[in-house]
Amino acid sequence: MTDAPPADVNGLEWAALRGMGALAEKMGMQFTEFSVDRCVGTMPVEGNTQPVGLLHGGAYVVLGESLGSMAANLHAGPGRLAVGVDINATHTRSATSGVVTGVCTPVHLGRSITVHEIVVTDDQGRRCSTIRITNMIKDLPPT
Image: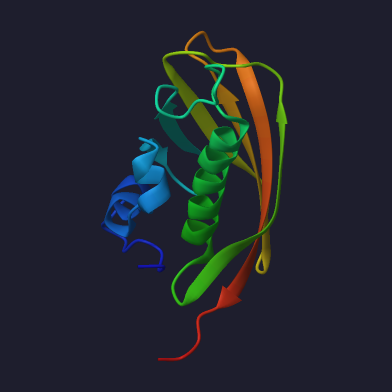
């Protein structure tokens, strides 16, 4: 399902119906808030660490891309698909336990390009990573 939610379905329900994808599910992600203006998701540190016990940098990026791409697809609307074309992350702190939370907000919502910023914090509310993703929106081919 790539279309925007029907009028009687909110963004969180749309995200649940659409699914997060196998990787996000394996990493234990959960969406707790979902709209065009703000998406929030969580991910456990346990099971997503590098060998020295820190949350893997790639795990931050997977959380950010999952939130940003889903938000871009919600914005894209019926008959359109958002695909990632650029992503970058700056890690400023290491989470070693608990749960991290990603908050995704739009920087730009255009007809063909979206840009989202995702701020990931630890259980104490300290910023651990800042991710920016750019998605291109294109029309789905006719079926």
